[in-house]
Structures are given as C-alpha cells and as structure tokens.
Length: 366
Image 1 (spheres, one colour):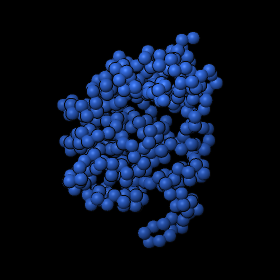
Image 2: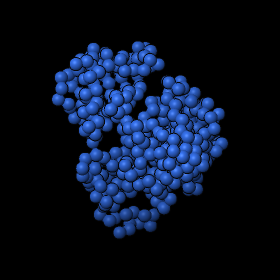
Image 3: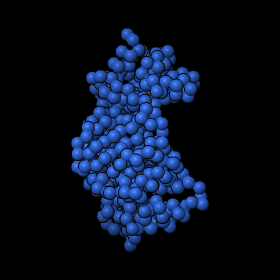
Image 4: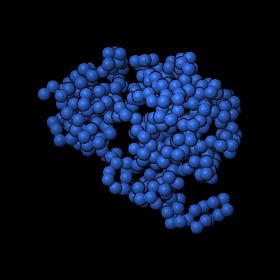
C-alpha cells in the first residue's frame, strides 16, 4: 500500500468518527482527537520516510521551498470523497511529523455550533468597526467566525473579502459576494493582503489572524473608513486581548491609541470548548465583551483591570463573563458541574452562583 493510500485511509477513518485532528509522528501509530481527547489508532507505526514522502507529495508547489528551507509548512489538502484538511508539516528531533485538521467545505450555522447567536447576529449588523474572536488554538474561533460570515452571506448584500492561512471553509455566494484569498497563494502575507484590500471595495473584511502591527493598523484604518473587520487573536480573555493590541505599538503611542481602539472596537468574543454532558462532542463557552459607553471609557482611561467587572455588569447589552455562560450551560443541562468548574477562571465564584448566591455592588443577592 502506498503512503498516500495509508494516509487517505486514516483520514477517512477520522472523518467517519468525527475526529477534529489527526496526529502523525514518525515511528508512532497515528492519533485522532475525538471530543477533545487523543485516541491512538490500531495500526503499524508510520516511518519517517513515509511521513516525509506524504508532505512532499501533498504540499502545493508554492510552498515546497518553505518546507525545504524552513522545515515547517502550512497548507490545505483535499481528498475527494473524504474532505478538506488544514495541514501543518514540521520537524521534531530531526524527524518529520504532521498534524491535520478536518475542515468542512460547508460553513456552519450558529445552531450547528450550539451557539446562542443573538449577540453574534447583532454584531453582524454593524456597519463598521472591529470584532475580534479570541481563544487558544482549537477553541473553535475559526468556526464561529465562519458562522458569522455565513450569516451575513445569507442575510445582507455585502462584498466580503477574507484573508486566510490557509482557507478553511469555502463559501458559495448567496446574497453577498465573497472573495477568499489564501496567504502564500493569492497574496504573500496578511500585511500585504490588508494593504490592498481597501482598493477592492469591501464592506466586510475577515483577517484570519491579527498577528502584527501592520495588519492591525490597517484594520483600524479600514474600520474608521466604513468597513466591518473581523479577526482572530490568541488571548484567554477580553482584558488580555485589549492589552495585546497595545503591545503591537510603542509606548509613546498608547494614549492616542486608547481613544482610537475604544472608538473602533465593537466586541471581543473569547471562546473555549467544554465537553458536552451527553452524546459526546463539545459545547462552546464564551466571554462576550460588547463595547458601550462605559466599556469605551474604561479603555480610553487605560483601566484594563476593570474590564471583567464591566462585562459582568453589562449583561443587558449582550456582554457576559465565562462564569455567566458556564452557569447557563450547567443550568440548561448541557455540561456537567465538574467540567464547568474545571474550565472556570473563578471556580469559587461559580460554585456560589450555582448555589444561588450572587455578589452585586450592593452586597450578596440570593
């Protein structure tokens, strides 16, 4: 059996069992990530020559030099009748490894992701500004962004331009026109893509990752000239996300940026995935920081340590803390109390909430 036949069989097994990721390490059997846990596949170990051969046979021509020079590479790979995969090939201890993530051709809906979509739908109505999806790798933020783009496509007549590395979900134009640009194939970098996007008459811009000053600065400019910009950021909560934006710039620009970012930002949504109580799978739990006058004042004054308190006090505008969302999921019977406590940033407070005890500025409320 050829290496491609072996890998294709493994990918078929992964898709049939609902695995999110496939791990292939030299001299080891493959592993699948199922409902957040790694499970080994009963198969012979895959040798380094076979892993290297797969990368060199599957990597697009444009990225072949990246693999040879940098010994790591990202690209998309399709197996007819099975699906599309985001591939990362790399060396560890001099031996090749591959991690592949299954991505759907069909962008998900809010319902399919088990997301309460009202807050996200309201953000999709915005005419301009920046919306940032935050979370660790594998937290589902790309899927949530795709569901928002999918909602706009089916609801509004917009021109949407996406910059992705690589393209994950593919869209069919419905009410909107969607142009998807892949970094390394359609444009050399996020910064280069952002520098030209404003000449493409977009209404909505999706940036796969806000990873440097040039990209975010162009996103700010776009938001201030009447465009709605979506992006992702590696951050564990709203406070960390806001502080990370300022880390792109020198300290002497901070005061001016506090006003600029407070005016441009519409929301940060930070997401985690938590095991479902029944039926396997995982539910998204999120912290939503929806900016209103109080939130903007907090950022303009640089009082980032107060952001969580602002979120907790503004549930009426769609904001909510992780604990507020975990409380909802436990009460709705979607996740277990034990798992909620493990994922909570403040388990003691959540324990009190689940007992019916809440703290307010005026004291304890039962």
